[in-house]
Length: 433
Image 1 (cartoon, one colour):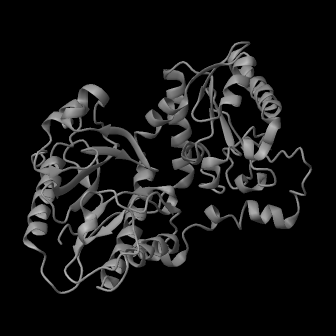
Image 2 (cartoon, rainbow, N blue to C red; image 1 turned 30 degrees about the horizontal axis):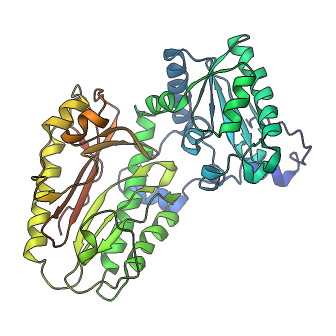
Image 3 (spheres, rainbow, N blue to C red; image 1 turned 90 degrees about the horizontal axis):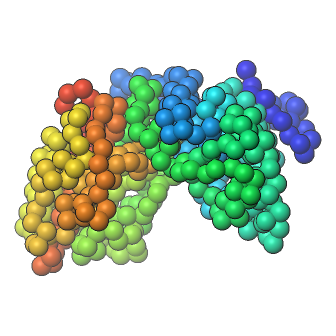
C-alpha cells in the first residue's frame, strides 16, 4: 500500500515513472542490495523487519507525547524525521535549510511536508497518512517574505493541531527558526521542547533497531579492514579517511558526522580533523568513525593503529595501555539500573593532571549521538544530569589518553547494548595497536 500523496501543486504524481520512484524504485525499498545482504547472512545477522521497526518508533513517540502532555509534535530535525517516518531527502541539506517537517499526533497520526516536488519520496511508507509540499520561512527559501511564509505554515499547523488538542493545543517542537516560533505563538499554539520528547522516544531500541545496528556495525568493520590494509606510510590523513567514506557509502551507509582522524604529533590534543599531513613510518593513526551507516543507524567507535613496520614508541604504547584499561574497566559499569551519576563518579580514568581526556566518559547512540551524555566528575555540578540505564539502550564507552607532557595520543571507543545483565559488545573489532 502506498501512502496518500496530496500535492497542491498538481504535479504528475500518478505517472508510472513517479509511482515507480515512490515504491519499487525507492532506495529504501531496494534496500542494501543482494550482495551486502548475503554478506550479513554469512555473518549470521538477521535483517530488520522494517514495518515492525517503523511501528515501534511511532508508538514510542506517541507514548512520550502523552507522557509529557502534548497533543502532537512538529519535527524538523532530520534525525527525528527519519525516526518517525523512515524517509530521507537530502539529509544534510535539510539540516541547514528548513524545507522538510512532520506532524506526529498524540492520536498516532503521521503527516509529512516535503521539499516541493519531492512528495513522492515517502510513497514507500504506508504509515504516513498524508504528504504535502513544505512551506518554509527559511531565509534562503523565503527571502524577505519569511514572516508571510511563517504565518502560512502556522495557520496550516494550527488546523491540524486543534483537531487533536482543541482551541489551544500544546505542541512539541524540536528545531525551527525564530519567525516560525513567533508565528506558532500568534496562532495560539503553546510550544514545548520537542527535542526532549524525541530523545526520550529514541532512547530505547527495539529488537529490529538492534538488528539494523548490527548490520551497520558489520558494514563499518568491513570498511575498517580496508582502511587497515591500505594504511601505509606516505599516505596523507585524508587519503586514509576517504576510505572510510567510500566503504560506508558502498555498504548502504549515509554520511559521516565528523572528520576526526589524525596522525603522529596531531593526535594530542584530540579532535583535530584529517589534514594533508603525510603519515610517517611508526606514526600513531587514530580516528573516530562517527558514521551514520546502513538503515540510518550510527556506528560510533574509535581505534588507534601504528602505521608501517616500526614498533610503537614507548609513550604511545603506554597511552594505549591506559586507554584500553579505561575502556575495559568502564564497560563493566554498564548494567541496568545504574544511574548516570554512578557512571560519572564510578568510572576509572588516568589522572587528569597528567593526561588529557575525551569530552565525556559515555554517551548514548542510535541514529546519531543520543542522550545521555555522561561527563567527567569535575563537570557534574555545572553540566551533569541524572537518569538510569535500561535494557534496550545503546551506549558508547570512551577513552582518549594524551600525556600533558607531550607525545602521541590514543583514542578508543566501543558501542554496547544494555541488556538485563552484562552489556553486550556490538563492536568487537580488535582494540590492539
